[in-house]
Image 1: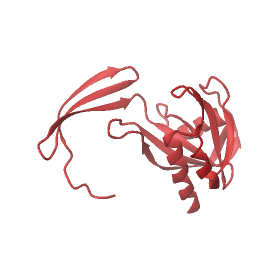
Image 2: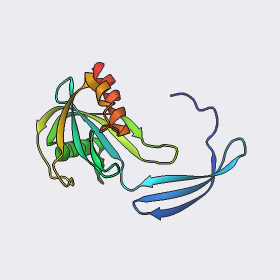
Image 3: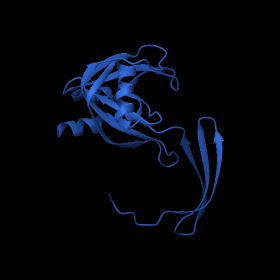
Length: 184
């Protein structure tokens, strides 16, 4: 980790408001050069999320195709979901894998945390690689069964150019996992 060359801004005041599924902090900040600014910080409700890279074999990841309401289309991506109260990221990854893809994993490894937009959001997603899969399904909250799409890791260059594969966490997770798996 590179050392930070300056102190964090001083927080003079925080005003919090509830806004639907989020909490918004309005921060009154003073930077080390004396500048004062107002920033907003968005907090999601809950305990974070997981994104799972389920490996069918050493070369093949299992993607899911599901409806993405934000884009109003079907989108390819990785298994992902919220961490429930009392769950660890690994437990959440195993549950989401069973709910969305109908598989459990005998090996789950948490690689790192990913952020979405750290300049204004506190949300963290835990990246988990799942290996040694076996069939097991749990009921989930999806309105329809998700389509399973196996994809070779050596064809990531083709996947990232697809219009229906645009979710940033999935793209980052696959590249990170691919590099990690090379060293295993």
